Length: 152
Image 1 (cartoon, rainbow, N blue to C red):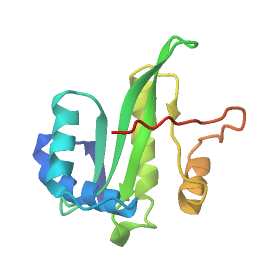
Image 2: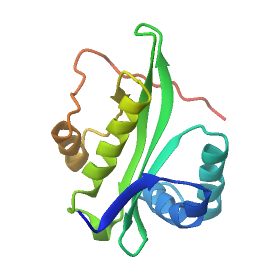
Image 3: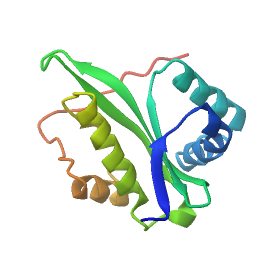
Image 4: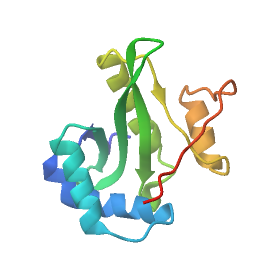
């Protein structure tokens, strides 16, 4: 693990991060769009609408990232975070880099006095489901998740 560093992404990393973000979107069956990925990430960073953490190899190559969005719980009257995106380059999987990114997210949650991190993943995502359980997340069996999709 000494060969990898996790840090907050800045505009400086956007070009390289956009390539990995594009691979992430393709993994989830979206069409390639590097320019769109770059513009999306720039907007998130410039508007301070999300926190993006990247993991770099010792050669300073970005090999993974995690993106979280701030939310608020009215019933708890506290901030919480939505872990929306987590991706590690296929060539670097199995090295514990996702766990490094999650640990950074958990530390950020504590540092911002947020009450929790929430996320969703597909039921068929066996690796992700195992990863989240081993990093301290608990599966919510008390609530249903619903989505309304706008027709554009």
